[in-house]
Amino acid sequence: MSGFVTGVIPSRVNPDLQEERDRASFNVTELTHIIDGGAEKTTQRKRIESILFGDPDFRGFQDAKAFGSKSDFYSAMVHKSTKLFKLKQELRWSEEEFGIALRIAGQGMALNLQHDMFIPALERLATKEQKAKWLIPAKQYKIIGTYAQTEMGHVGKSSNHAVVLATLIIKGKKYGMHPFFVQIRSMEDHTPMPGIKIGDIGPRMGRLTSDNGYLILNNIRIPRENMLMKNAQVSPDGTFTAKAPNQANYATMVMVRVDISQYSSYLLSQGATIGIRYSAVRRQSKLDPKEREPKILEYQTQQFKLFPALAFAYAIFFSSRSLRRNYTEAYTEIQKGNLQKLPELHCQSAGMKAFCSDNMLRELEIIRQSCGGHGYLNASGIAMLVTTAAPIVTVEGETTVMYLQVARTVSRAAKLVQTDVLSGIPQHLAFNKNLVNMVRAAKAHCYYSVVKDFSEAVQILKASHQTIKVLRTLCCFFAVHGVVEESGDFLEEGISNNTRQVVAPTAKPQNTQCKNTKQTSTKRRVRDKERQRTTQKHQTQRTTHKPTRPMGNRCRIRTAICHGNNRRPNAVALVDAFDHRDMALSSAIGSYDGNAYERLFKSAEKDPMNNEEVHQSYHQYLRSFIQEMNKAKL
Ligand SMILES: Cc1cc2nc3c(=O)[nH]c(=O)nc-3n(C[C@H](O)[C@H](O)[C@H](O)COP(=O)(O)OP(=O)(O)OC[C@H]3O[C@@H](n4cnc5c(N)ncnc54)[C@H](O)[C@@H]3O)c2cc1C
Image 1 (cartoon, protein in one colour):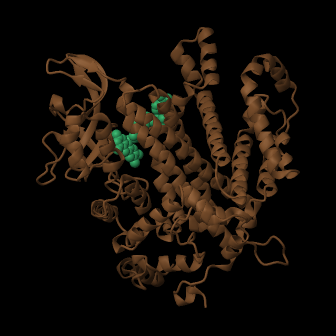
Image 2 (cartoon, rainbow, N blue to C red):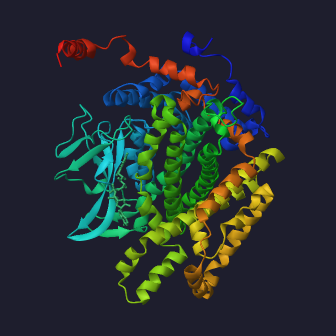
């Protein structure tokens, strides 16, 4: 009997989903181990998951997420955060274990900034003596802190201390932004310190659980010793000495950008799991009038929506893991006083932060729409992912601004600015005139880097032939997807004069695709040299060119990708490999057993609106209104 009627969720896996799993051509557990970083890391993660989801306080939050006021959410999250901090101490979790717990325990934890920014800022910016004074109490949760760089958006209700980034002025001379350690609330009763105005930033889109606040410092005197002086010092007589370039003061932001890149792949992998599992159990409309309604995953258009998202999730995963390695290496050097790699790291992390979060948000919204009406429900899990992801493109460096930082080192964009400057346009105007091209160049550069990282990761992977084959196919798909999406640029640049050149996969699915991608990137390398020579020719082509119907070709290529590579059989297995527990996904339509409708119904029943058959508003307003209308003689 259906769970709709009995209110019971079947214990069996939905046969439609099982059918997809049975088709997989590779070992899912092997890929899970690769994602976790080894079999022992999978065991470690599962142990932490069991601790967290075995605790009713963490389980109960799944419902609070769906029903409740902003204040309820915040309270639930403060409770959850403090509980997690205590667990860290009681179970003596390492930083790595705690990082896993933070990722799994949920998005938007109220006190996340303590570990995301406050402690890292003290670690990176404080002197040895300052660390003894503030870092140790922060790690013991004796003080709760935030990181306040922009005017609004940091922790408002929870924190009692802040690392404030402010302009240092000595005797009227400005020395740039520097970090200061400031007490913002009383340690006795949590009231704001004199001269401090602090509060919640107000209703916002999603993120109901996090504590975003405003902070105003009015005539606050911060003692000289409270400037975090690892990178620059001010002596009692006002002498300023810099030990490192000012960029070093943004080391915390670089670290957070690396975190965001990795977190983006995590959120997108959750979204892809929900979208693909749901599409395997949802049947709708007719393809063949004689057959039953197909799974929506059968539709090419549905594959168009979901497979790029899946490829992005894997691509960003491998690339951000490589960025993490680079960061760890560079940070070790930085700690030894060698700051040589800092500018490169700054640029890399800015580009990856923008690329990963930007694409994650776009793909999540596509997945949400691919779930039809249920994608609109909180119970789907996907709607919550979109609102969680939305501010990530803005925090720690807004996407465009980040891309522009990358563009400053992209040679083609620099040439465009240079050409304008040489023609007599003032530099700032030349810069502004080329901003759109610069962002496009930065995006292309980032896409290329992610493809490169992904393919290098697959090349050195020690795994079975089947698993490597699946990942290689996914990597090729991701590369070709980028070419297709930007086919206009490829045509314009003369890299391809007809996008049909990359349609070849239909004939020879995987190898030909890789070859074409390789050819394309080789052509890209020689593009700059050729560009000047061919400019004249292109101009002639553009004016005399017969339209090549790029949109038609674009569709054909995407069809070829989805079909030719025959990736469909592995779609469910590829998302299963992320191994998201149902508790972590918090999705009625994306659960492992695929019993979407029963879970949706059960979730709707939990809505407090359904506690009574007849809502109080009927007695208050509706009944009298209906009666009045019935009496009225019209
Ligand atoms: C949820 C959330 C949490 C946050 N947490 C913190 C926190 O803990 N600590 C903290 O200090 N801050 C925090 N912030 C603030 C956040 O860091 C900033 O909002 C972010 O850096 C963007 O800056 P902005 O709001 O000033 O946007 P703006 O810089 O004003 O951007 C607005 C628009 O102008 C464009 N623009 C700006 N500059 C340029 C340029 N040079 N060239 C071209 N276009 C440009 C942008 O592309 C964008 O389209 C948080 C914000 C949010 C939403």
